[in-house]
Length: 189
Ligand SMILES: [Fe+2]
Ligand SMILES: [Fe+2]
View 1 (cartoon, protein in one colour):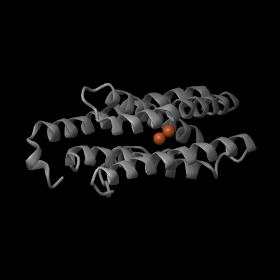
View 2: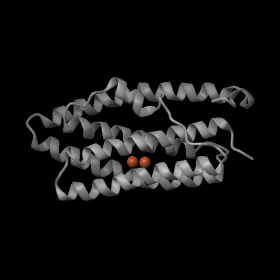
View 3: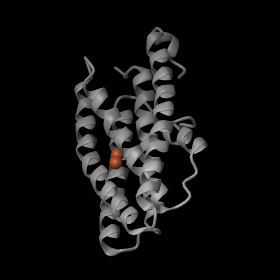
View 4: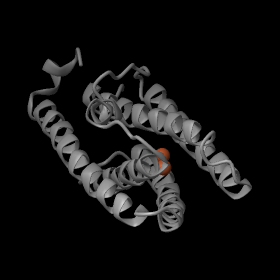
């Protein structure tokens, strides 16, 4: 039996966030050229594209189809944020990764999550922890080396966390509204 179309849509939002996250990392590769960052970015980028592939496979196996998402998390963030320098880009990456981690942990804790979805959630959550820690460490290292860098870092993190809170509240409201309506009316979503 095909999965609930709302669940398929939710997985498409996760897939979109992973793909756009990968795109941000790909752009970072031309800014952080030291060998250690290149090594970590390569592994990190491979993780995010694998996460996108895992969600795509789960969508397909559940009888759904991968869909283009125009109003997902990163798109909404992108409308409000223009990172101006490397400290900004890294701070944004930290905030986005923290949200991905928090979103997956929160989903896995809900009652009655299908075992196949739980499997993907636990697989992707494992990687998000090291993503946050290395990007945060790199951000702190660069901030400490630049004049006024620590203040700029703290200011960027605070600004992006506030934007992230607004964007996530919008997405959650949308998701709740969809799940409160009877499933048959949602067939077109
Ligand atoms: Fe990911
Ligand atoms: Fe990640």
